Image (cartoon, rainbow, N blue to C red; front, top):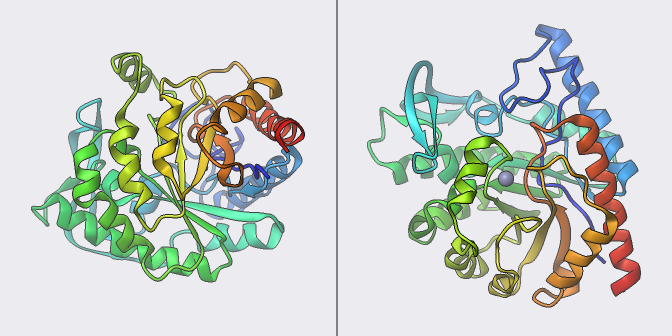
Length: 339
Ligand code: ZN
């Protein structure tokens, strides 16, 4: 009961990348960098195991950014042709690369770290990929002339990698779609269909992570404008409940999402965010168990997976470690209390 997981990323050691940054520059290059990425992956695995996390990840130690770490491996993108674009319905501006030709994978994207992680743990292993809607919201289109067409082209590329990851022994493949909380109408119109293209032919567990973003300033300010009850999920949960995705990862700790909305995810595993990644205050096991207890009013116990609200990449590493330990301890307490 209550197997734990994390949204995906963990902070990188300071010898691998500059700490405290979302798009941190690497501190090494060439063969040294490749070795260091795997050393950091081993640490990420060990830390999750020690904390009692059940469905672990590679900590995303081998990628610089959750979207661009994938895009680096896609043909048809010109990284020198950068344009300023409003991201997430203009919540913040970013200089993004441009799609200039037909999209296809250059080769494997995450084979090295996925196979490495598989060898070094017996735990269930999850690997994350960016979702098609979030990708097209993070890149300029100079070729397709149609956002949906481009999203489906990315979905084909994602599917190729996802199938290969399954063959590598990955148990859960998760797509990160923070854009789902921004373009709620488009989720029903084509967002889910694009995800279905991305998971086509997979037999492993599939998941989608939908959050209100990392704990960066632009997101904290945006959340402050959303009022006292965040109802974005209300629009997209019913669509997700009828989708082919197996698990839904969402933000719950310190968020203003009304818990009764969880009822709308009937039939899905819920990766319940019980760890806030936007504060350095470490949750107590008691607080975590209490939130799990409240959620049990709306989700069956066998479908509840305690998780983090979002990735922990930009956090202080010692705090992220403490939060991992709290997650494991909180779930253990909840098992004793509600088992
Ligand atoms: Zn997130």
